[in-house]
Amino acid sequence: MPAFEGKVAVVTGASRGIGAGVAAMLAREGARVVCCARTLEEGSHPLAGSLERTVAEIRSSGGTALAVAANLAVDAECEKLIAKARAEFGAVDILVNNAAVAFFGCILDVPMSRWTTSWRVTVHAPIVLSRLALPDMIARGDGRIVNVTSESAVGPGPGPPSGPSVGDAAYGAQKAAIERLTQGIAHEVYANGVGVAAVAPSQIVPTPGALANGQITGTDDPRAEDPAYMPEAIRILLTDPLDRMTGRVVYSQQLLVERGVLHGGAGLGVDRDRRVTGYAMALPSLS
Image: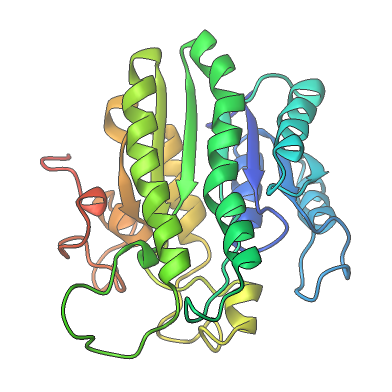
């Protein structure tokens, strides 16, 4: 039986990249998937990808999906998304907060309007969506929320800089906030049977955005991560027992190595033993 048969899942940022891959994975595993992003139609955004494409590909493979275009910087749009999911499919069982807005640059150069927008989409929207989805999850005594984070949450460290700034102070602060919120909410709803976790790519996923801004040159770039890794890591977190997954903040390849999905030289990027934040360390004595 598919892992998510009969479940209702909401995935934000599902027009391309990680979000589209996660939506496809959930649909293959039997979920009815509500795909959310701002880009509804192909060609209406400079980057390739759209909700219409994501949903069409899911349906062509026999899955069930619905496109909901929404600007998650606006609370009313978040409310519309969850209301539409309930009306079409029923109460939300799975929420994947993947959408983010990243404006890179020196903190003195990034306009405050961009700072505000990025915080509203990357941090505020996941809180609003979680608040909207959690009452039904709590009432059923079951549910899962997975937040997508980033290695940028790890700061450059104290003292004189050892290399050039990459201009990710704002984005890194937002992802650090997501990691802390993940564990805080996980602690609050554990007794209600609801699990909350976060996962970051170990390396750079070759999404249209990453390729367009020059983070990597292509899928053969040694800094690139296989696009299949994040959906598989999220599948593991969603299917894990509550006690094993809740409160985890983990890297994709760290989790896949831990579960035996990757072997040998895998785990490049963020090593599972690297001392980073307390949030990202592997749990002890996992078997």
